[in-house]
Image (cartoon, rainbow, N blue to C red; front, side, top):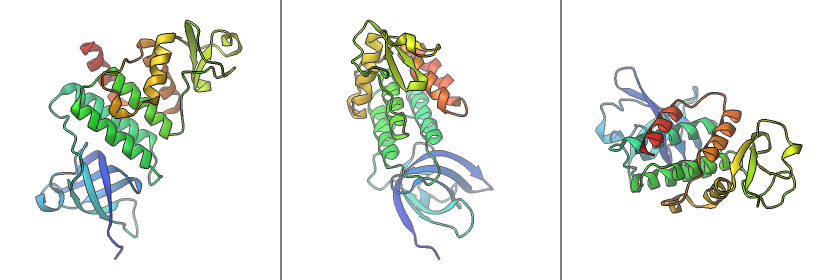
Length: 253
């Protein structure tokens, strides 16, 4: 029998299977993203503590199966891990669900995901103790793009490398960052004009730790559009949680 393995994990997705089982997708600290099945998870309070639900932060115990992609989950417990409290606020639910889906989309099965795990854990902890706002959303999006290999540049021109110090710059998705007004004529059409304040806000958010974002100034609608445009350029589908989150944040604003 394969040896039991253990790692902290965050549940990204979950669904019922058969009468009492749960199939879950988890982001683990040590083994990347895993799919697993919890036999009797809906009925067993001892082995699973009802911890195989989205947002659950668990110490995961599992065994690999000789055949099949799903690991066999033997236990899932809270241990001494931080628990995320977002279920009583609609804004937190909307932003948290978006964080889970974006993370799920940007990570591959079994790939190294230590940075992704720590970023998501920090973001959900910040969301639990704060509120859902544009600054936290943008900071998480930039961090997620960073660990996925798409670090965006908002402080320096992608063409001349000079500091973008004009009144406005232009975000070019294909270049992964901004182009200054002086170099704008040398790039293809379709660039998004950003106010200098929005570019500066995104540069600052991208450099901050997630737990420092509370009270930070977000970029305006132009900055939000730049990130959205870039995400659409690299993802193979539209995130179903994005529209709901947009409606919540816009309504709050």
